[in-house]
Length: 146
Image (tube, rainbow, N blue to C red; front, side, top):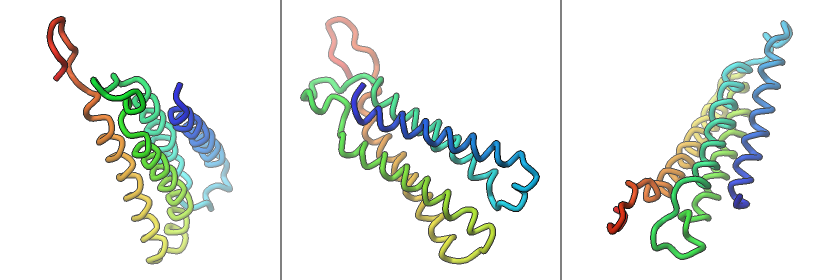
């Protein structure tokens, strides 16, 4: 398993553990005073755990690019590292800004939430851009891939 894929998968495990911890904390009556615990936990579960795991495993498992050099078989590694950084930075900003925006609404927290959303969107765009050419029809005998 390539190093980049291991980072995606391990980061997904960390977000899963944090999401489940927040879900467990939310069960206690005292958690009612914690703002935005439920939406943050869902976001960590679906974006932090699921999306990140999908990005990592898909990067590893999708067919390699035909005719690419050995170091470019899976596309651009710097682009996928950029997607990894954007996704995780966006998640961290969301975890910090969303509860604050609920507790004390203001332009700072709203702005950080917007930056968070843009970073996560850029991560998804980078993943799609890097992976698009690897999704192709199967090559039939005697034909070249499309």
